[in-house]
Amino acid sequence: MSDNNIDEESKKKQEKELKKQLKNQRSLARIKKAFGVLFVLYIVIFIVMYRIKNDEEFNPSIYSKVGANTNGYTLSIKDALIIKEYTINRYKDYLERGLVQEAYNMLSSDYKKYMTFDEYKSSVVGINYSTIDMKSIRSRSKYAYEAEVTYEKNGEVVETVFMLYPNEFNETIYTISPDKFLICYRNQEFAMDGINLIVDECIVFVDSIELRGKITNNDWFEEIELTRIAASYDGKLNKWFNYNNKLAKGETKEIDIKFENLNYFVPNMIVLQRNKKNIERTYQFRFYENGKK
Image (cartoon, rainbow, N blue to C red):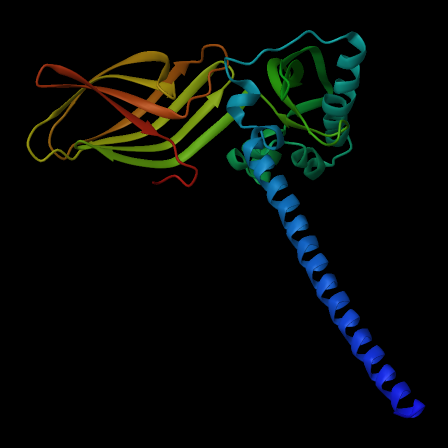
């Protein structure tokens, strides 16, 4: 065999080996890329699951912010002054400078659902903005502070409570819930055992709960005798209100009740008691986000 033939065979063998190595490298690169994608996907899933599991840390509910089971703590004078500067003073400054939209933007999402911007503009008419002042502040929970605030409106001194909610990611940003307001439920409709309950409005304040709506007897066979009504959080009652009413078949009656709110109680349902054939029956009507199940 000539040297030329040997060199040719050697060259082909080297080319074949090189192609094999390149193929292996491409396969390895594809495997590494696939593992990289899977790793990133795993991290994303982990973060999503962590946030879902700890959603209360990122988006605390009104129940966690001000519920009766929260644990507040005393603030130092320095911390109180800092919070006042970022909340009441900033809010007061916006109003004094006529920046009503900026003041409205500081309000909590629950408050803005309760009151539109036009309604808010009307509500602050008559307030002497220069008299807005924070008299005291305490921690309600790690998600909320309660501040005693005074101001003059139409020549009279108003003493009230503002709820201040810190932003989890920016210590200089707070939202405000003024004038004792906590949350409002509207346009809730329920039906159970012949009882049709429509809650036009249930407004929860620091010291009271106002319930307005109507109740209808849809029982085809008998009248309904209602005995008591209460606001409740997962079965834990705030306080019973004696509501002795009888409704004939098809009859509708208006509801306009004001409860005393005990210890910043935030309900998530209305509870009715009914005397049915001499047996007290209890019905729970849980509020829904969109107003109807």
